[in-house]
Amino acid sequence: MQLKSLPLIESLFSEVNPIPVKEALNIIGYNFGIPRLPLVKLSETKKEILEKEINII
Image (cartoon, rainbow, N blue to C red; front, side, top):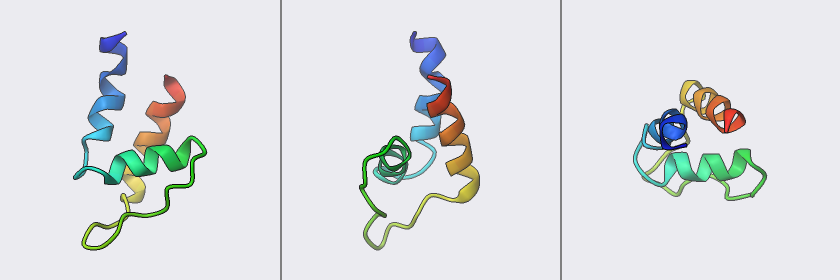
């Protein structure tokens, strides 16, 4: 199970915390909004990867 989850874990650590975590929660249906400044939204490329990994698990 851990090995299967590694791509998701890597995508959750692709940016500074809490950016990917907040985006992951938004993807699964919780409305956590965007990070406060100075943090910025997750890039579209990384968001697509994160969505793909969430849908696999």
